[in-house]
Length: 98
Image 1 (cartoon, rainbow, N blue to C red):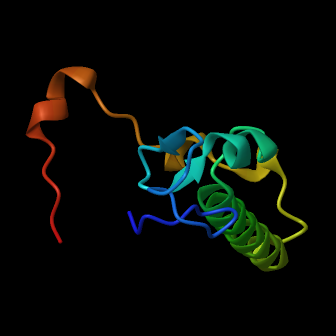
Image 2: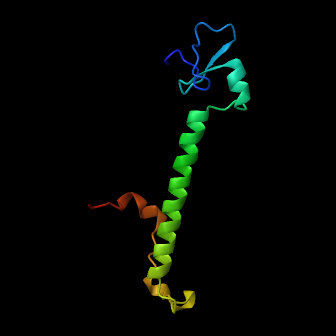
Image 3: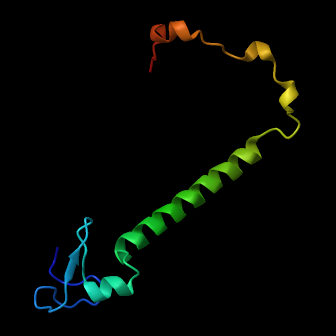
């Protein structure tokens, strides 16, 4: 904590207002925190940006995969013989090799 309100940039220690220090470490005057609808503006921005980037990346990967899929392939074209069936009693015997 820097001792400065993360909203109005005024000192927290010299304030007659109540001070709120959030678990994220950001600090606000009570009045400033209420103006922000009781949310940390920095963390909210950070998470919104991260979610937006992740969604864009996910959609990009989905679109790339759609382009790679053979449009003529039908679900019925898959052979059941190709399916791998694992006996639940033998799960402990499975080893992963890298």
